[in-house]
Length: 416
Length: 189
Image (tube, rainbow over all chains, first blue to last red; front, side, top):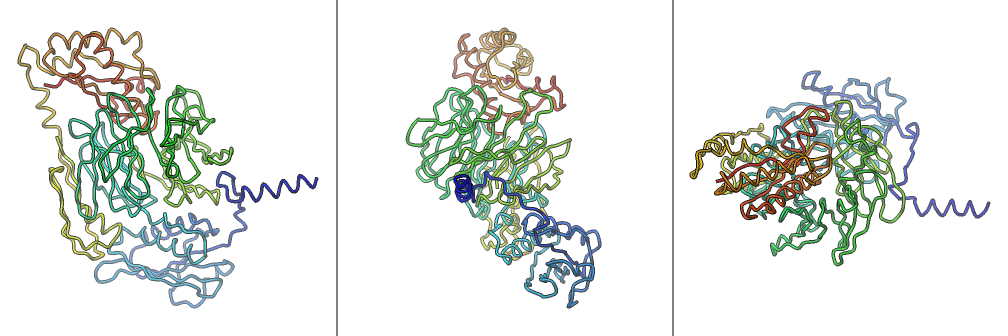
């Protein structure tokens, strides 16, 4: 018995911070928070829109039980509304439009009846209100001393096919509620952020004789050609320092993974299998994870850059055709059923390169395009279920998934 | 054919980072139509403004190009080259499609002998982004290998993959998905 107890504690210590272990938190144990609107500008529709966005963001930070009742009050009231008197926290905000048409927001956070945090925000137009909402949630999270949710402020870049061989590349906030078409017209796909500051991106253009990888410097407003390839070219990953790209190129009709040095402009072939090797992702400094058909179906493998030894990473799933890597963790998309066409379920799974555990992250529908946040705290993905599309955020350490409705056409590729 | 519109990139920067003071300088070598926004470096965000340029005109011109050595136009030759279809997640040429590919080789050696062939690989929607593009390419390459073994010079053949982004059928049915797992032929001067 003592041995069993000792083993239990040992395993607890070993796996305490393992993201493949599910953390079950009862909702009741979280502190409650209510949101009070004290806006003096804008119509009811917009007020409610902002309220909903803020409630959604507060939910995503996973620190509170968020009350969803919309209530209005005066910003200068020294006490919280009676209806909210039993809440642990109250977030009160006031929106007002200034003479320049800018949206100004002031917030106060009450711990019971005591004001504990206040801040002001401003954006030039009300249609980008969601960035203030994200910033408020980020600041509340910081105030509460929780691990950073800086990914809330990062942008998502994605391509959307609008007609056969016609696409758009769009930059959006993490909920995709604000969307900005940065490239429109033609067939341009597979956008990939070029650096951690998101000031530039790569994409594949199918406009010329051969597919061409292009680079867009958003600040300078410049596009330049990087490298062309027969058949196909995709930038699958960018090293932390931005100097090395992992490309999938189709030279001689053969899809393989290459590294490309952005300074020397030299390419080096990394995989040599006669089937399909795609989707290379850096795993530390000396390894890559990629998708290969070498078992007769797509699955996840790893390979050291210095040798030709290939290791199978995933032993579950009938067709695992996409993955994203962060540190020791790999999230991959797996087809759960063997039917070619009838009501297939595609779920996301998380594995660690250091343990044998598999954690299923989604339960129903077609879940695809998994992408880790830069810090590995969250995973973004697209869920299609019963004719509805949604963008999902998985908080790995909180065991919670959040879905935001998506009205777009079909997303072709996405990076975060 | 180039028709990218890089729309208001400076506006994008202002929206998403809000801290640029650099005057935009757009390299027009790669873009035919670029809209610049001369916005000052304030938090003011201009409304999104874009322009779409159709690429249809030049495509029409292509299909009307006539062939020097014969009576057939390129469009007439392409009409003699029906698509080659594939099984789910496969890129081998099916027995039932072999004759079709051999027929393409015959056309390539006769009425299209002075022209080039472009093979366009396509997939259904059931794969994943990059994998589907690679699968489309392998399908095009499988067709190319047969054409070369049938006597077509490899230098006359180019390949491209469109993954699942070029469907001919968008219904959610078996038959429809089967139509999208294909290699199309284009004839180039």
